[in-house]
Image (cartoon, rainbow, N blue to C red; front, top):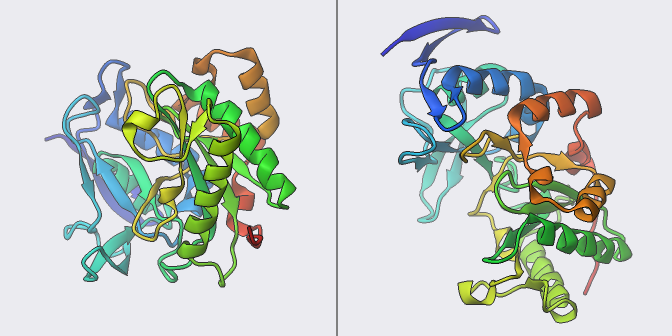
Length: 301
């Protein structure tokens, strides 16, 4: 195993197997992955801050086996921040918290290509600061169908007085976020509200979307996954890499940009590669910044 050392913020980090090609069909090594996360750090760190981090690790690359790691590895450096969160069996679990560049690079060195976080911060795990609509295309549908659904959803929620923000999943679909940032909000509120909205969408656009979870209901439709609004579930963090054939990124879009792509057609236009992600983020800033701070109250339905 090859090893090198770097110093970040006065801390010496050992980095291993930097030459290993983790995206073999594209030619993207662990060194490239760490360079991406170093470049995108100013944009991704605010969205990771104070959240219990779930690692999705690909030690032999995206074409081989992976595993999720919720419990923060015991071999972590003593400077890595952690949080104790009740897990499914109501037993406390120690999660990593990535609040700084050195932790982000340490996590990347574990071949954790994907970074998943809950919709709540570790200090208030039962209080979501956002509601999400996870738009997932079924067989025969694609990300352009998700775009049409997202635009309809944006307009529907706008009529209710709610601002929304959209990002690519980095995979096949889109994520529409509704920032809340209110201590009074519960996951019961967001799950109930999002399910009702999804069912309204299904009623009015039955050929485009479904709110039903059964796989057979999703053919040639977009599944609006409202069930992600749950304290026990996580979402891919904005700006995280995805483990696909190429290093695509879960990336925020402006609504007018989504309108443009939806009109032009060509689903490949909505897949953002890592080099474009860093360039675009530096040019336009963090389009998801408002998700962290904007306060909104869910209306009664």
